[in-house]
Length: 218
Image (cartoon, rainbow, N blue to C red; front, side, top):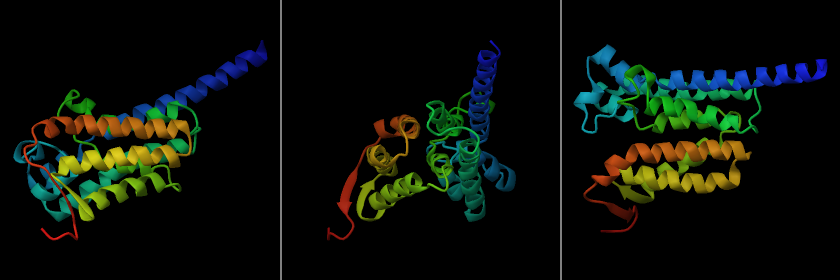
């Protein structure tokens, strides 16, 4: 009886740790630095003043300038990085609940609690942060960066939304072979699904597309 209660208590503590990191990740992710930084330092509203009404890193650069953009990028990466990096040092990355920790800051960014689950961003920078949180194993983050750079400089997809969709689809296929565990792959799959979902509305209104090789003469 004593042993069973001890095991139950230990399991409960472990599950509470997972829950704590999931909630922490979501709450951190809900802080929209792409809106707050330009608003505080430049009095610019990236939700209203940008073309796509997206409180993200790209619009922080465009609307707030390079300093606002760099600060936003760093904070967006950190809010994804911190909960995953801390969690991997306290709980097992092999447990399926770890995939929920991976997605939590990305979900918070997309559907922030502080704005009643509306007006979230499109999750590119925070997704990188979440993947880099697996440090010292950063190969998933590097692979995602590779695909985005590849489809921006070698085989060029335009507009940006098409490039994002193709890059993230290639990333999830690649991660199937390099993810350390099924839980991490599921986390990657959920991140990709959420990013694609956030870009679908833009994709549906897309008028012109272009795919070309960078070194091919027009």
